[in-house]
View 1 (cartoon, rainbow, N blue to C red):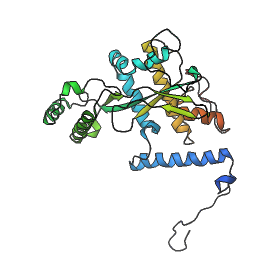
View 2 (cartoon, helix red, strand yellow; view 1 turned 90 degrees about the horizontal axis):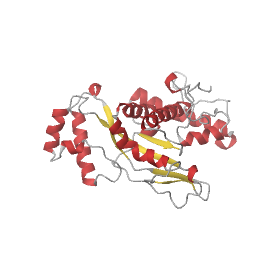
View 3 (cartoon, rainbow, N blue to C red; view 1 turned 60 degrees about the horizontal axis):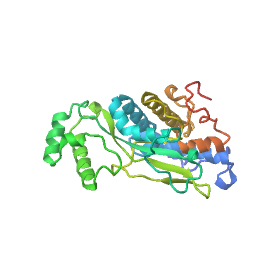
View 4 (cartoon, rainbow, N blue to C red; view 1 turned 180 degrees about the vertical axis):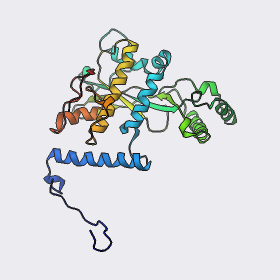
Length: 290
């Protein structure tokens, strides 16, 4: 510290080497944990959007709760194609998305689906304002409230509806806003290519903004529609767990679960000695491994 002012201008520690090349892999990962936690702290305490939404446990949990709130019809509209894609590995059903030519082991793929949140207009008490605002923009309100998936929305529609959404939120009280699933992407397909790298065949996205969560599923049997919804809930809880563990934190109790969450964390759990094997017993709703 500087004498007189007490300003901190230099710090030192002897826990690990300052030069990353002189640290162990686990030490470097601990530094990365600190960086992730710093971004999360600034987001939580200062309100800055320092994390990608797909890596932010608050956004992932908002998506999880919005999925639980969907009607059976709405859930099937948004997630039925993904469920059928998974079924195609175990049943004689048509596969919505063909596997890329570079896929050598079909059961080693990872299916990814981007999910976008929007304002639940009726639940937020904004129906009248929304209809009036849509009319001002020359939009058909009832058409705009129908589920959309990747490729189903033109660029002009995206721009018009995004402007409508921004103006509608400006009219609303943040504390009164209820969120719902607004759109999902097409099905992205991740797979190990010939070089051993994780390659992704990206599908179309319905909105020109970052998604709020991204499902990442191995081709396990999805079960019934109700069972698949329950599995997605567990999967997103595992993702939230991954976010906290990746910051060096113990997750809150609802997210102390075991199973496959984020693909990158499954790799980290396998690679670094400091992590437990939290992804190994997929679908197990039992005790969290400390």
